[in-house]
Length: 123
Image 1 (tube, rainbow, N blue to C red):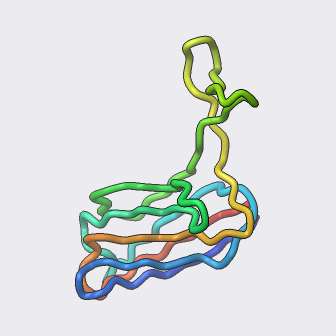
Image 2 (image 1 turned 90 degrees about the vertical axis):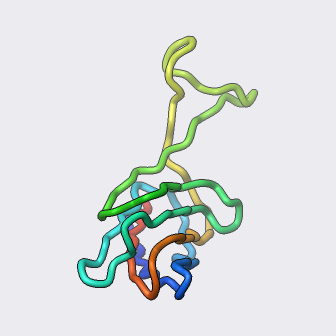
Image 3 (image 1 turned 120 degrees about the horizontal axis):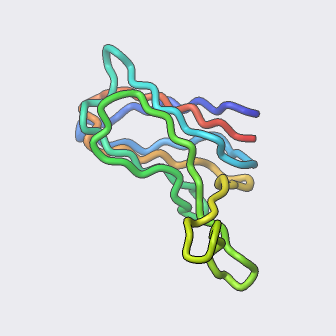
């Protein structure tokens, strides 16, 4: 398991875009750590994707505190049919994989010159 730490600082308008180093493997989790004194403003919005393909890893609005997510995506058969646990059941999901790609972290409504830290765990 590898941990990639990305510290993001917003501009005066409360926005920011930052990137992880290149990663290869399955994303196990993404942790947002709010700085107690200069953290993102309450109500910050995240859009976290793979840079090359735009695959969604975490999209959430109005975040107020540190949070952890374990991104998953639906799986499919070779015929592109959704894999289900049972006929008409819940979709089977698996970790999202990235191959020599960077994680793109886009912030909105984060406040002026505020800081947030993201830890990306990759297997």
